[in-house]
Image 1 (cartoon, rainbow, N blue to C red):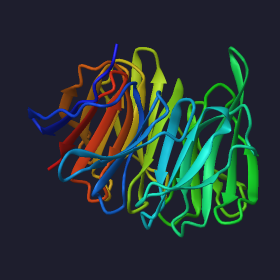
Image 2 (cartoon, one colour; image 1 turned 90 degrees about the horizontal axis):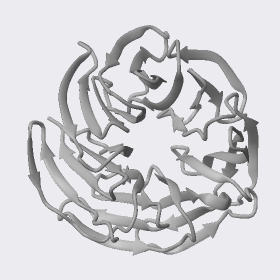
Image 3 (cartoon, helix red, strand yellow; image 1 turned 180 degrees about the vertical axis):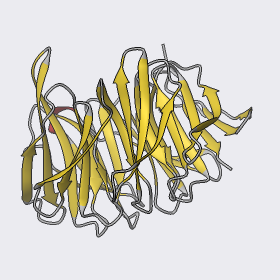
Length: 320
């Protein structure tokens, strides 16, 4: 049965719907362009779609992958977009024309590319890559490549071999954060060297993380069954500033506003929650009604956020 991609415009408290049709499978990841005019979504069906945010229309659809596309990232200047998927598939696209510029399949065969991030200058691409060993274990690595030459810069085996990690870069491009077990581990982008800094949930497993746009605040989401939480710290000092509870199932994604005062989270419980970080108060809960929420993306100005889920639906709403 064909799934519809519903794009809903939501204001905090009132849902005013507008639908777009065209997606055939679950939306697995989302990202806004740096200027906020375009939303890119990737899905289980292997497509990459570009949406015009102002007109709420599909701008372009690309079929560059034979399997699921799991991750997507814009370069800081918005000129390039990278996608990652099954079988080690990494593609570099011209974000304006949709032309395929490069394919990095061969270096990472038989792998799942679960996270991607460009450095701010656009010269390096970091990927979180996992190889399945058997049903209960995998080999997870971080790999960095020079975008122009495709030369590998470093390779690091992560500490957690039971999840395929996502990656988040600090705004200055110097630090890489990766979930590992119940903690977040930090690496130097230039060398791949692990930092002594660790921030921990205390129990359970980390499943989502975020750094604010000013680089001052870090959030780590996860926990164990029946006790999901989001912890928030001042990144420089490691001081905990908030602990957020309310999701009834695995938290899959988190996003912080530029100044770190607002946090949006998505969960397998089918909800999207908006939190006030300084007070720890829950501001609003949206019931997505499309099953688990897989992906979350804030716009660069922090005024809009998008979430995608299993039902092939994207929610786009304004955040005051």
